[in-house]
Length: 237
Ligand code: OOG
Ligand code: MG
Image (cartoon, rainbow, N blue to C red; front, top):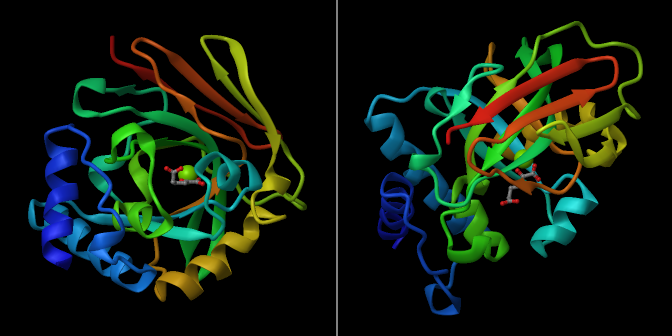
């Protein structure tokens, strides 16, 4: 069953066509869901992609409420998901993408070596962006892309920095890094515990600080995190 579900999610991503939720009959629990995620990402690695980091999800109340689930989850980032800062996201390869403001950490020696403002692009492979907790875990926690702004040393106190998500120069979401586990630095021990491994040079996305917003064709998206600076992307027309 694990390989069948992984193949279904992989084909949905490759053909950018949403799939129906697996439903109760599939009997997917959290442990099996992580096995599906591993098999799903293994298919990408077999096609030549490389693992470059991890992401946490549902670390904020706003996201838990938006998605109707209530546990921290994690997923895997590959090099193919990376979008250069200021770069363009090709919407033709996506289903119903959304963007959310995040904080990224650079991992060295099991510790945080640097911090950056970031944008995560999520794109559920399920119809209508609806899923249960095991279903979203299996779907690599909706991971689809990420932008990391300029790295800088971690300033003192990053537990209450203002976060702004702008779309075409208009404010779309406002929040605080406090929404990320009370302090985004908690993402490191949480990721180490959940994933069991943090490699040197990996990027860790700590989780969204606000709810996500749909990414429309041609939109210019900018995330600003107080003291950290900005990260931006543009959606293809
Ligand atoms: C699940 C992914 C959540 C976050 O930062 O909370 C996530 C979803 O919302 O589709 O990446
Ligand atoms: Mg996220």
